[in-house]
Amino acid sequence: MQKTEIVLKGSREKPIPVDIRYKKTNQLKPIVIFCHGFKGFKDWGHFNLIADEFAKHDFVFVKFNFSYNGTTPENPVDFSDLDAFGNNNFSIELDDLGLVIDYIESAAGQYEGNGQKIYLIGHSRGGGIAILKTYEDARIHKLATWASVKDVADFFINQDLDKWKADGLIYTLNARTQQKMPLYNQVYEDFIKNKDHLDIPKAAASIDIPWLIVHGTNDESVPLHFAEILHQLNKSSEFSTIEDANHSFGGQHLWNSVQLPRDSKILTEKTIAFLKQ
Image (cartoon, rainbow, N blue to C red):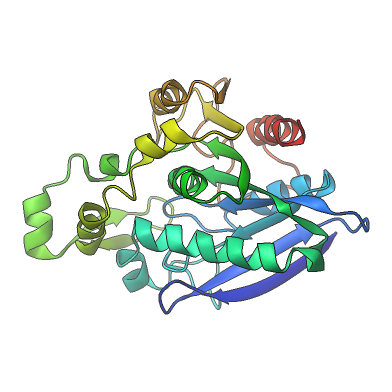
């Protein structure tokens, strides 16, 4: 297994750590770019095992940290930059993904990648970002979303927006680390300013490439009916559920086993089969 780690310049001043995995065969392979979710990072839990599984099946698998996700290159699995986390927004993540695509398209040959076959996978909030990017970027040829959000506006439901604006920030609890993580009001202001550009339902309805939607029936974070709504918006998408699977498809951080959790094994098998069609 070949593994390369690089750091790209992000869409603002923060860096984007990237790792690229593939099996050396001297043959060009489709490129899969994976987008992590909210309070996530590229090395969370069992994501490295997932990356290796795709690489074993002759994909170049690229995963990266959004530049403002709260981790740093020095501390890639800890939320040590909470100010960055609070200043993250959907536009930054969309721009970061564009920069990763730019790089991997230009450097594809270094990794035995086929720059004409770029596929996106997004988990949770990363699924929403992948939907938006697929809609606007003709370089994407297939899409898979795992437990995806359906609308950026949902992020602001049940928030006291007037108080958020007056105080300048709210806090969200990280249940795993018990950190109170700030969210500055700029995330809502960015959404209002770029509402059309961040319209996931519009993007979903307009996608005309192969799209696989996968969701666990026991998802505790993103309701199953969100996936059903995405599928209704785009009837040509392929919709699949995993019985009793939770939001992380059985994974957790830390993940110490060398085996994928059962539900993630099903998830990767479904996605690999879809991308190989």
